[in-house]
Length: 397
Ligand code: MAN
Image (cartoon, rainbow, N blue to C red; front, side, top):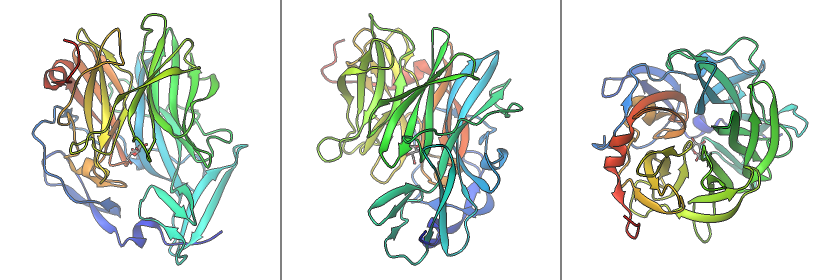
């Protein structure tokens, strides 16, 4: 096809990245990165990050096929199965980049890998966002994502089981890949809600499994543009509920919505429950994380919020137990924000993004993508999050 410089060298961003422990002098390593303006360290961050962070880096996983390289690891779903902790990691790949060209993979609807290529000097090419290629009015992704299962005995050291099958995009709604999978266990079934990307748009797909070997594809459950779908782990009354994030950029915005369903496949009675907030850490977009956590005070939902500069932090919403469309309380300031080297610098810096956690009493173990590059983990206390929330005006006591 057409050719172009790599997104990063095009922007003159062949820079030094700094990796290390929180608040320590970071070690130097030369990689292709995008570094955006440094942010102040926040005082309200409630997370105890693992000393072992990042627990997974791109070089820890082999590419899905020869000729591709693992560019980033992102945003894992998390679950327990057969006594182990499992991550369903998003693995973003592309071919090794050569000077003067940008190449990237897509899938054909029947599952064949195709490599597209653009010339560096083509004026129709816009590579200002390292995640996206804009070319002549069309959008592509710089990488193709699939999902990979990794298991651990201790929740820190993860490895791929032998003969592990990668979960790839399939069909015409997943030709640009599958991303950011939430895993929710309901009645012995695992429900996988994930982002389906294709030239048709970005929507939410559902696959189910009982044994992680056989999968039922239920198709797209929320049509474009929609993502960040978190299922509640139990019915409320006689209905299933889901948080989701449609986008309505011309009138409205990127807000969190609630939907209900009799069967987890057909969704209706949509209600908008949380807007982005001008002047706040979540001013440009908000989206649900993993399944809401049942507490005595209400459903606690950890969500991401971003500014228009694309700084991604985490905060929380507290939803009424019986009427989950009623928001009782919300984070005024983030409960977790990019503050370490591995969160501030990487493929797309200043990002903390979560869609997976485990609960053990008061303790949340959150797994997250940092700087769209590596996988990290942290502990949070449910009580500390609840104590940090501000009541929402108009909510019943
Ligand atoms: C998007 C998401 C994530 C990603 C963030 C930050 O909103 O879909 O996949 O981690 O942007 O780039």
